[in-house]
Image (cartoon, rainbow, N blue to C red; front, side, top):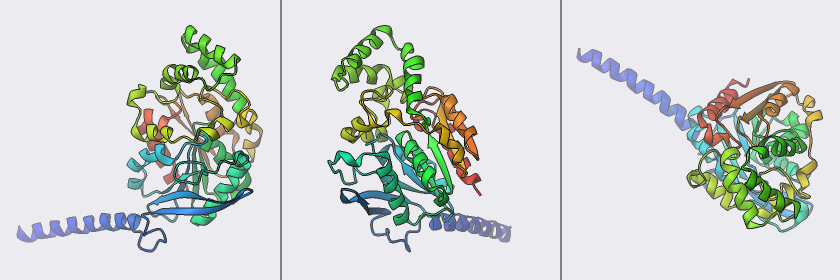
Length: 337
């Protein structure tokens, strides 16, 4: 009996040792150049306006699965992605938080000429090179504006990527505007919608009452389906750190479509989706600010597409339909050859 107990204990020890060994490899920073900073690396980038630094932070080690997270906004930051900490490590997926130029931990130049799609694409390429990511492991997960940036990067550099994940973003801003105006706006209280339209017709996009009406009546239905006072801390911190100058120039004053002369207003890549050969996952939420049917359609237009639908999700499906979102994303990443 005593020998049997010792034998069973030895099996437990071996099993635990194997699990610890696997965990230790994933969390072993001993041979990495970012060990001193706990995975943080400031990357110097070249721009037409000079050199600046952008902030990145690596979590984990995996030679075949390295995910660069492209946050939305434009002008938000990495913080709202932090729910990933509850899912990616247990799947041994290596991932990189990253504040784009102008956002939070990165440099914040005041030069308006820097806020263009092409300049951001060039920035991502410089970050990729600095992090040593390549076609055997480099996966982009871009959410919202980050989905635009990821798609634009892939259309230019897909030969340097393993896969692309476009989260809660359609391939056409004009279609996004049409969906907001024709489908979602009529669902608002008529009095609220009338007040919103009055401000828009007057071009008074930064009026506090205008923004307050959208935040109170639109955001909890289509941006993140929770009462505003219950929005998760990573989200509220990220929003508090928003660089509004970038956001206003590229997106406009709010998530209620794109208005005014925002730079992204005419962006449309529907006809270019067919050129993507790499694996592409698109993610849509049933209650999103954008049409989930179009996000599904995107997956049929690329050459190797998959669609993940979040039936309870909105624009931040990673929070209001979290299990569906992250189980789907991790399963997809693990399925890549």
